[in-house]
Length: 590
Image: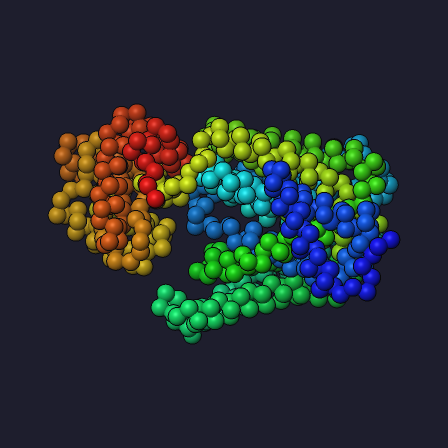
């Protein structure tokens, strides 16, 4: 046995990062996910191959695993910006809920009916519930990596990222709920219902800790911004000092959240109260995404550390993997993998169909959710740190990691082919009318007059875009332009617009008027479609290109009729973003 006894943990940490990075690099060279290579390195370092890391040494790196879990959780919450999901919220929630529920039910039923892991009757129910909750997760890391690699952009990509974020929020909540319930069942032999109230109470405490910490972090960031002044006017040295303060605040917030949850668990575990650090940190990200203007800057502060942190995370996960157990868990891993894949494919399609999304989306969303990496492994590491599951952790680790590796290998080519099939790959350039995303489109606007419509749209513009002016000021600017000359361009379309002082991009919104209104159009037709534009003063040339592009597009009869007959903002965006509209909504040269 060649354990690194007596060796400094710092030296071991350096070796883990170096060898794990090398393993990830080799995996990518043969077109495999990096985490596969890092897990393999962990297996070789663990006790089943070279026995370089003892159980004690593995446990000494628990703070790193906890920090990585916190960072994953904050990032998941940070992707849930409700302002950008308003038009799509019913579609995204329904797809997320249906496919998560379907996956949980199929994995649990398959495991509990066949019991392929050979669990004892007294422990089978709680352990299968926990495994089924882990099965509902979807890998944001792997899927987003493939999206970036393919330079993919479009409605399917947007839907996928939002569904993954909601899915993993639900996954973590369900996991923590059933982990608390299973803890009570395994320790005291309590029945399922007896432990439910304590589990729910623990989740509420975690959410409260996360929400208060997120608000406190936002207050701290705003205070720092006031102290140092506007970022764009700061010297490089002062800007670095500001970032150092923000980094410190963010680090303290994550440690505080995790520490408070662990403290409460330690003192109230006898009552079955186990607030989840993962859930609390996810709430921090959620608050930052929707209440703070510092979200992007805070999350980017860890970009330099992220690779090293997650390399350690996956290597340590692999070090717990017992290769000798494959012979006894392979059937369980296979059942877990197949049932989960069936749940994702069927549940994604069913959720999309029930939400009324387009056929292109509901047929494609299921395969986009097949990857399972960071979150599943993160939840297994949570179980590794929980003494209640110590007798089962090797079985769990071997089963989940085996299924995860198979899912990662199978999902990468499938996701790539789906993105190619729907035509969302290779979009590395900005389109002319890029600003008309789904969340900026109103499929049916009821207005009494032209002026009422313009006023409503001015308020909608301010709500949806980060424009530093009031809705009243914007409306007056649009109104003055409209009074000087009608912005109707014929064929039932109007393009009201105004100049704004700040920014380097054009902001826009679109609405279908119901009923159509008189805009004094040159062809005398009432206006059915309104595209309102707010243009910075230095973007005059692009402003003219946008209006020309909209005019040409709306003179195309097939596109115009398709937009006029659309029933949702999703359909309208798909039409504008289609290949047919590419001649008018073209890619800009970089």
